[in-house]
Length: 77
Image (cartoon, rainbow, N blue to C red; front, side, top):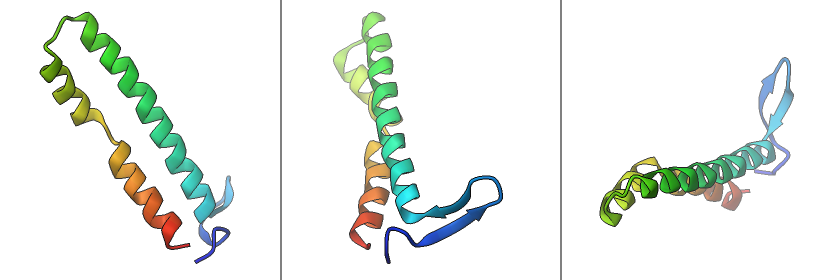
């Protein structure tokens, strides 16, 4: 499968390719990282125990799930 393979057609956005999907997943990873940093800052300001903070952050962290999809698509290209 090539990066320029069309996987979806949207009447407004036009053709969406696998590369477009990879870019989108990369942006989700970046957004997730930024959101986790904000969440960590909020949690630290509330004087929670470090293990509580880690537990809460892990529940919100989507990076590995998104990265798995991204890597799977990239490797198959």
